[in-house]
Amino acid sequence: MHEPTVDSHAPILGSRQLRWADEADCAAYACKTAAAVASPSRPELANAYIELHGNLGAGKTTFVRHLLRALGVQSRIKSPTYTVMEAYDLPGLSRLPGLPDGVASHFDFYRFTDPREWVDAGFREVFAEPGLKLAEWPENAQAMLPVADLRLYIEANTDDSRSVRLEAGTMLGLALL
Image (cartoon, rainbow, N blue to C red; front, side):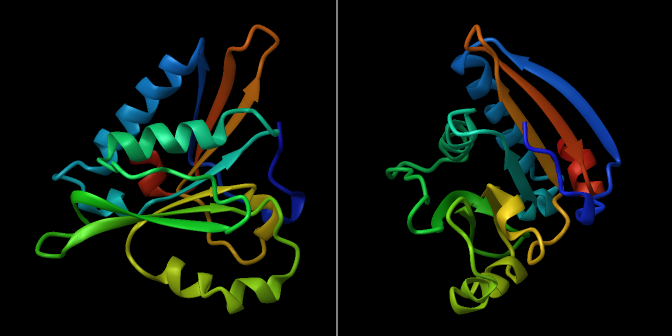
């Protein structure tokens, strides 16, 4: 499993361990997370920033796909490995009362190598706007990223199950935890 870099000093306000026996467990946890993000009593959760850590094949993109499906995305959910970011409208999920439907931005920083890409691609503006942000391989852009509300560390086990450590970095993250 990838650990946060020593220089990141990311706070941990709470943590939890999970085991996903199979993809159905991953989907079930994604549905619980979606229910929290879409909660009308906590509209600020629709603006959470969630980091996904783990080796290739650990299940980061699978979790994101299940989460976005549970939030109502009907279109094809593509891995942003080459595009770095894919945006999705979240039908029926308003960011705050009285505002239009929400949006989710799915990042994959696996191939991210140049900090200038951050500015050139407009990611500063994306992170400044309301909406759910999901980032795979965040350690490759750590210097530019805000503190994650929630971090998922996913590790594939030899029996195809997954060990998952959740860490809340903010009060929003604690609410999602």
